[in-house]
Length: 295
Image (tube, rainbow, N blue to C red; front, side, top):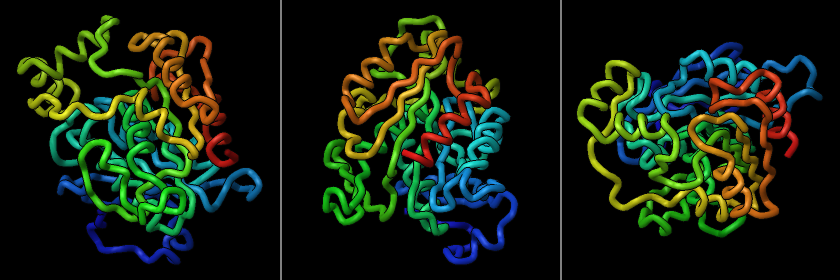
C-alpha cells in the first residue's frame, strides 16, 4: 500500500543508522501522496520505553506533521517509543484534498504499514479530533491477520472496500477529542467548521487561511461512524481521552464511544482540558505514551 520515495528502507538498518527525523513520501491505496516523518525513540533508559513499539500520530483537521502541537506530541512520545507522524491528504505537504475523515483512513493505513516496514512489531495509533475519528475507523476496518484470519486484508466489507495492505493494522488505539457521530453541529465551533467544509467561500478560507485543501463532494457512502467503529476495535486495547472543556464536542461524545467499546476501552475525562493536540499538555501526552507502551 505504501511506498517510500527513495525506495524501501531495509528493516535492519533504520534504527541503527537514524538518530534524527527521517522524511518519506508514501502513497495511499487510492494513489494520493502522503508526507511522513519518522522520529527514533530517544529514551536514555531502556526501561523507560519500548524499543519494539512505534506510535503513529494522526493530527486534527487543519493540522499537519510539522505543526508545533504535533511536533510537541512527537517529542514527548519519542521518549517512550519511536514515532511516525504524517500529514493527512489536503494538509501540509501531502497531496489530494481533505475528505474530513473519510478517505483519510487510507492515509493512516499507509503510515502504519510504513511504520511496520521500519522493523517495529507493535504499532499504536494516536489520533486527535478528526484524527481521533480516523484511528477509530482504522482500528475497526484493519484487523490483525492473526486475530481474524483475514491474511493482512482490512475488514473492508463493512464499507464496501477491498484494499489489501499487509501490516496496516494497529495493535492498540488512542482517540483524543474525537466525535462520536457525524454531522454534529451542536456547538458554535462545529457550526463554523461545517460552514468551512460545505460552502465554496468556506473552502477558500480553509485553503488560504488554514492551508487546508478541502474536497467539495459530499460523502457517498457515509463512512462508518466513530461510535459504530469503537464497538468493532476489540480485542485491540482502546483508550478514549476527552477534555471537560472541549468547545467542539461535549462529554456525551466520549461517553458514547466508551459505552460502545465496553470493557475493551479505558476512558479518561481530563479536567480543564480543551480540544485535541493544541490542548494536550506534556503531562497528558506522557501519560498517553506510558499507556501506549505498557498496554
